[in-house]
Length: 118
Image (cartoon, rainbow, N blue to C red):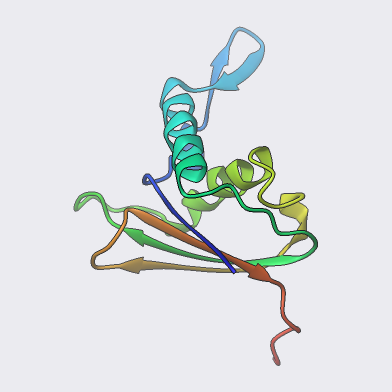
């Protein structure tokens, strides 16, 4: 099991900006990436190979309505870019929830378990 505490993630809607005909990482996303990469480095950059499960707990940063599922992409991309996981296509299960207190974003990475019963 690997656990990281990260800054609150950027919503999928704000990851990229359009400049001319190109899509580039937004300034907010670039700032978050630098902070999140630093957090991973400080906490000990670990690696997990093969299929994985992610458990993500988020503390709401304010009272605005937010779409919980829009926070997943930048976390997955961070884990791949930092070589914590091999590829986000290997994520077999994601558990995502709001929590009342704690770090802004807690991520637990585990080896994927057998499929849940339907």
